[in-house]
Amino acid sequence: MLNQERLSLEPILLKTETSGLADEEDCGRSVSLEELRSAHTSKQAWVSVDGVVHDLTKFRAQHPGGSDFISMSAGKDVSKLFDTYHGLRQRRILRKYGIGKLIGQDLPTFPPADDFWLTLRQRVDEHFELAKIDRKHSPNTLRRYALTVLVICCLYWMQWTLMSPSWSFYSISVAYGVALAQYCVSAIHDGSHGAIGRDPRLWKLLLIGHDCFNGCSSTLWIYQHVMSHHIFPNIDGFDTDIETAKIGFRRIKSTQKYFDFYRLQALYAPILYVLLACSVRMDDFIFYFTKRRGPLTVNPFTLSQDVVFWGGKLFFVLTRIILPLSLWGASMTRVIAAFFLTDFTFSIVLATIFQATHVVDSAAFPRINPKTGNIDTDWARIQVETAQDYAHDQPLTTLFSGSLNYQVVHHLFPTVAQEHIPALGPIVRQTAKEFGVKYEVKDSLWSAVGGHIGLLRMLGTPPSSH
Image 1 (cartoon, rainbow, N blue to C red):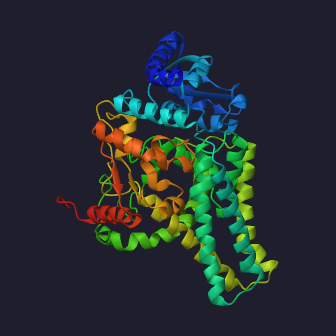
Image 2 (image 1 turned 180 degrees about the vertical axis):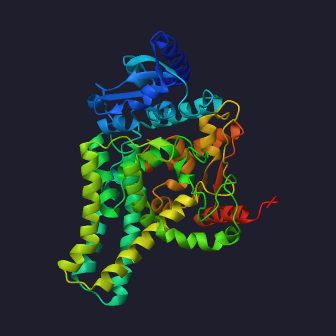
Image 3 (image 1 turned 30 degrees about the vertical axis):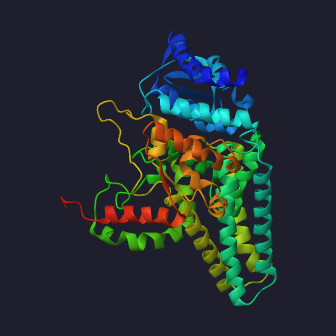
């Protein structure tokens, strides 16, 4: 009873505490946007939360989530990012580090949490409390990581030591790509959200696999996925997942200029998704040297981040190209063919899982209010309305996708281990229904993919003014 009382009071306390925090620290000095943005060095780490600037330089080494997350957040407004991963206790700790009020606005803001979000969060807290489950504890998920790594290593060894006939050699290449994709949707994804265990050393270990196995930067992935997409899903200019070039190969939002070749994008775009991994690796170097990732400044890499970035690239080239050629004496033809077959498979599996969740015809693409520069819809409602779930009654799809077929649930509660996510689906669905929030759940993966193709067709149709 006491626990339920505490849970029911926490949303009210959080509102009061947040308001009090800003009021209490308004008396501090004024901090300009330029000052905040420049405070992202090894000697200075400032962040803004709800208009209050905090100096976390000394706290960085003590941060339970690891110092790297402070280093990456430094110089930025992290209001919603903080709320997503922290609670009332962390708010109280944050008070100690306030140094003044931010003059100006770095990012669009959301209105205060409404009754939908407060009710939903309370119900989910009660679910874990009553079931006596730690939302981050999942031995089954850890076993899955270990099994996936074992499969990856075994497939790699089989491919280059057995020198199988062509049909089995290339079959192993395909299986290798599928296994790498599984590591992405499970270990890498969970590590980036701190959604497994409470030790940041585990999260970092899991993330290193992205650099070494896939040749893609885990640090830049966090900027893209955790600090951008999860905070501003489908919001043009702030969600790096829907960032497009002036003349992109596809049109996925109405704000893009239309070109005649988009008429066929529903046919050719899914084929080009095989180049996803190659594109990410090339972009890594661009973002690393330009210090930009969409709307976000990429802060100077720490020594450990640099070691992982460059060491991962070297390990990837060494294991995928150099060792097969030099150590096992494989022909260049086989090495190149295996590389691209694995890469294409890896890319298609990930593109299928990710494109079927947000870039679909049933998802909202919220706009910034041009008068205020802010967002008029509550953050939690946006998380629900900009995504779609699928195949809730298909355990194999849930396993295959790393529970990302519960995309809405994951966006609302990103720190929950994937094993526990399906149990939250009915809670979210019922609460959304009560508060009139549109919650889209497709019957299967293929109907969800159909929503993506539908969006490509819709936006590939010439606008009436064209």
